Length: 312
Ligand SMILES: Nc1ncnc2c1ncn2[C@@H]1O[C@H](COP(=O)(O)OP(=O)(O)OP(=O)(O)O)[C@@H](O)[C@H]1O
Ligand SMILES: [Mg+2]
Image 1 (cartoon, helix red, strand yellow):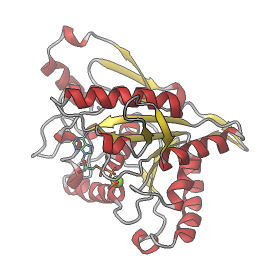
Image 2 (cartoon, protein in one colour; image 1 turned 180 degrees about the horizontal axis):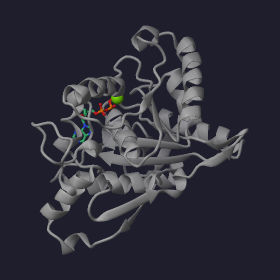
Image 3 (cartoon, helix red, strand yellow; image 1 turned 45 degrees about the horizontal axis):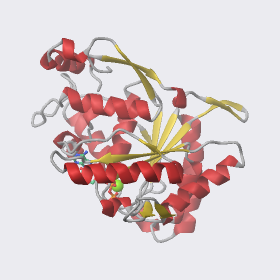
């Protein structure tokens, strides 16, 4: 299930914690960035499905009330799997209402329905994944306040960078946190009053080959900003067809195995699976222990074994 060259256990940041009358409280992961098109919905689906294959009870809430990309992917999944005669685990989805677009402009109603959905999701799951819109809404801010972990994908560009922090063009030091960073710092301060941590991981998405100068400069600026604002930098995801071609089937890279693969989709490269594993580990959701040196065996053999195992 976990790939040929790595074994995984659940990570320390994922261990359940005592909460109120119940023994455990689910962990809440909010995928957020006020910048549109950074990869939030792609990542939310990938994390959710990856953790399902690890036996976790996963719930999702899609707060992008207009686009509903995550919700649409799951609807495709519910249609495609039975039509193909295949089975795969699916997260529980908590929709605020049947037609979320209808309440997108009514934030008080959306807020109330979100709080209700979150209460139910916390009761039903080990992990609650919340996808948020590319913009600032009251309901998205409320979700950030509930997060144990915020995951922020960003494109490898200073345009995306500026949405997290405004930096001095000469020193690359922080001039001021962006509006979005302020939202997270505020959520962190509120949680601290209740002795609750808020971990924030920023990662670069859609990294392309070439582009070394820009990549290096964004990397340096990000490292400086991480210190000033207080986030961790997660491992990057490369630009890969495997992250974007499976939406119509409702699948993610984490689903593809020898037994579960649409005809038109190639088996993802081992490097892609390892990239996802590295990210899940950095997020504290799994712990990897290398079982066999990757270089000691041919990639094809390793990939076949990963596919047989049915997971990442
Ligand atoms: N690593 C990747 N490689 C290739 N394509 C990607 C990758 N990550 C995301 N994409 C593609 O980039 C586009 C934007 O991704 P996505 O919809 O996940 O972003 P988003 O942050 O949720 O956007 P929005 O703010 O509009 O909700 C989509 O077409 C998606 O398939
Ligand atoms: Mg989205």
